[in-house]
Length: 534
Image 1 (cartoon, rainbow, N blue to C red):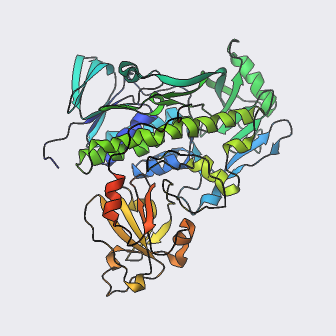
Image 2 (cartoon, one colour; image 1 turned 90 degrees about the vertical axis):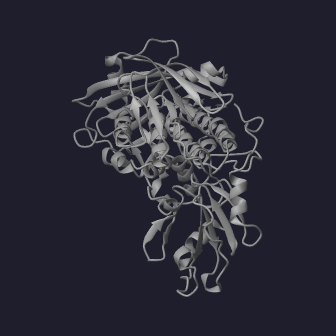
Image 3 (cartoon, rainbow, N blue to C red; image 1 turned 60 degrees about the vertical axis):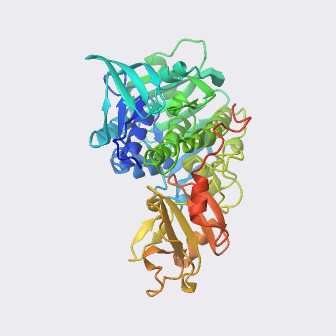
């Protein structure tokens, strides 16, 4: 790798996706600069539920403890029929207690989340956030990109290795690239309103902290935040926005004639299912709402954006470290595009129709308790890592089906050579990991570590004998529980990527982990499969 200083990665837009992406680059020790047009972070009433998969990303990027300290944890996502108050297929998060170290989701409004991410970013030695820096244009060159910014001190030019557009649904970057947005804007508006009211003691209501109430006349979503209760419901597309008194009357029809209720604020927004036709142009890549506008149902807006901040930064780190060529970046769009369009977009729309009793809830959830929780909490993502098409977000089938290439590997508990408990995702934080599932007593052949980008580890229910030479690279799987959960044959090699997704599964001895790694980081077609747009 070159010893020349790396040009920073430039990020435009300091919303949650821009902030999470900057934290990711900092984690990978990649220099960055983050530019925000406004003088402050957003104060608007926006997204409020953070799913388990996003918490896993925040853990990797070093900010999860700060987030959890300010949030409300939820072990049930309720789904009710408003007319009868009957409960239907609520999500019980504890069924994922072995799959993740965060068997819950959290409620935390976006304007509370963003300052937590920004505060963590302030301590980064790899870059900083610049407010009141408005992008006016950018130029691409063979080995860099140059952004032109308006600042309080006058015009400024900054050179970077890549430009990441996290500048929202009206992305200036996307417009300057001339990228079209495909899909539709629905003939509906949502109103989100916050009230400070005591529904826990003074006006007791036994609602889950996150509850969806379906109704053909007026569905409602009720969210308990640390500082308020949030209500979300549809309003007429062309009618006037309800005033404070009308909102109060609407809420009281839902929760009863409560007292001591204080209006805090509201926001009205249109509903979209629109996907950018392409997400990469040379050294410029689109992320979050700049790449996809998703119906904000079931928390799929913000959390789908965080998937981008999981799957793109490690690729950039590999390229800038010299561990892969720039073709590795093609996989970002190829894998994430169908997830946003045919995964999040369609699942959110199915959920919206189910809320208004126009569709079936089963179209947007797994078909069993485990699948429902995995779909709703972990987003059930199975990526098209081989370039053959596909990609999904709904988990169906048996309680925990055998693992497939493209799936997220469970964050299972194992034990290292010294007996310490660890979680599987700790091993994949900054490298590919080759796991060899074999009997440690039989001294299986494990390739030596050949690169800082790839680790080789033996997983067995049998502790590696002290004289085997395998002990330092052996993990204990008591009872073969991980092996059984994955549903693989004995003597199997599983290659896991730094985003926790499985790159390959094959019999040991049929090929080497190095060869699988080279295939996983090599060039594949840059565009998403035909037919993956809405």
